[in-house]
Image (cartoon, rainbow, N blue to C red; front, top):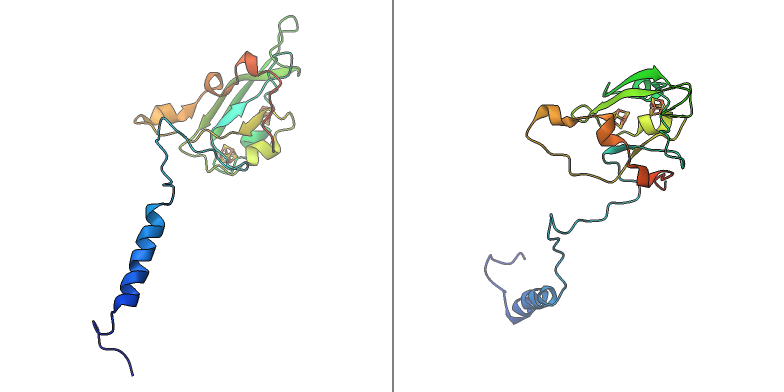
Length: 157
Ligand code: SF4
Ligand code: SF4
C-alpha cells in the first residue's frame, strides 16, 4: 500500500539527509577563480587558431589557400603574394600577404588544420574570444602568427 504523503519520514531519513550534507561539507570545493585562474583545456580542445613558423623564423604558410577552400563556413580569407628572393617570408614561392579568419563564422571544426599541407595552421587552446565589436572578431595574420620566440613550435596532437 502506498505511503501517505508526509507519513513515515522518520529518524532514518533525517540521518541520511544529514549524512549527505556532512559528506559535502568536507569535500574540497571545485571553484575556479576566473579570470585569475583558468582551467586547462582537454588535449583535443579547439580554440583560437595560430599560424606557425619554421625553426628559422620563416612563416610556414605559403598562401596556398587550401584552408580557405576546405573551410565549410567560408571563414578564412587568404591573399598570397610572391616572395622576395632576397628577403623571403616563407620557404615557398609565395606567402600569405593577408590572412584573416572571421571567428563569428568559425565553427571550430578543424578542417583548415587538416587541409594545410605545411602544418601552418592549428587550433589552439585560447577560448577567451568574446568582444563587443563585430570587427574585432576578424583576426588578422598579425594576431594569429606566433611570435619569433615560438619559431619551430607545433602543438601536440
Ligand atoms: S575551424 Fe573550421 S570553420 Fe573554423 S576556420 Fe577552420 S575550417 Fe573554417
Ligand atoms: S595555412 Fe596552410 S592551407 Fe592555409 S594558405 Fe597557409 S599553407 Fe595554405
